[in-house]
Length: 236
Image 1 (tube, helix red, strand yellow):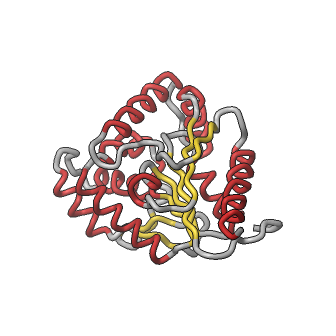
Image 2 (image 1 turned 30 degrees about the vertical axis):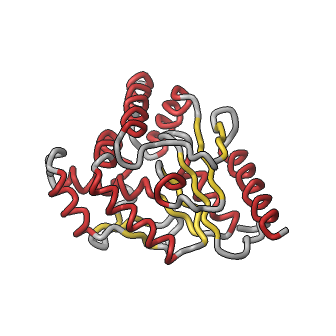
Image 3 (image 1 turned 45 degrees about the vertical axis):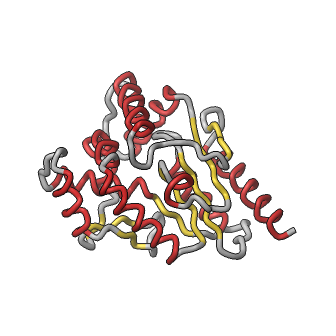
């Protein structure tokens, strides 16, 4: 946070968008620059997917998935940077980025009752931490519709596939061919945008930002300027 003055007062900033746009990284860095907490809601759905896989639950058995995930009491250790997602008080940050989790997370996220459970948890976090940068698919549209500042990050699917491959390499995993990654991203986009509950949409009052042509640091710097300007206008 060196060189960046923490903003004053309560504010919730939402970052929505499809997979591979850099939302998690951007949200975490933006939160640091603004002096806010960071909520990675994607980690919550990924943890639910990991639990489903590790417990051998059939994807069609949505009631058991909901019951077991609720029992896991997903929450974050806010003393860590980034905050660590916990299930049954055990850290899941490493597991949730594995390829098998990525492959099914959009199916898990489409379970209506599970989304209702997650939305309640996320709103509770917003009450407990009212100075928040939160990222996901439905943060500005469903979870925090009254958030003061909203962004929608997007990028060409081919660019997102390249980024996902690089992300997997950095995590120590050998990525599949980019054509396969692109197919998976397009499939996930379709699932996320057409599901009944909490579909991926750009809120009417969100600013759309194309992250494809610019670096992560440039995206973060731009969003920081926009947030500070919006809050300065609030005071004037």
